Image (cartoon, rainbow, N blue to C red; front, side, top):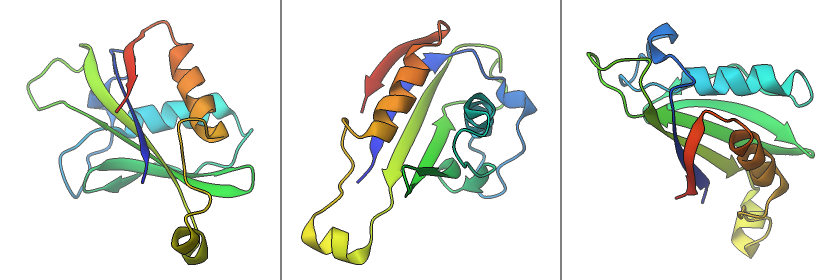
Length: 131
């Protein structure tokens, strides 16, 4: 299970992103911005491509999470227009934790609350909602 947060913004220019070699899906710019914003306060990997978008790994309170990003954009659209984004957070759990139903991610998870507040604090991010 993961937590997904959707929002709209023109903050990120997807035309500057690397091409996703798996699928023509954008999202790298959001993860690069988050990495820059965290400014080494948390260990976060460089974004990498996946078939559903882009992802980075982060260590948060000694736990590993996967941060995912994708946006609805197609060639020919204005890359500076307000785009709809999906930001996902997935908490990695051991087999035993999954088996016993422990350490599940929730909307009250500290990592989720941090990134939610980070996105809410940006004046040019609109319509923030949990999916």
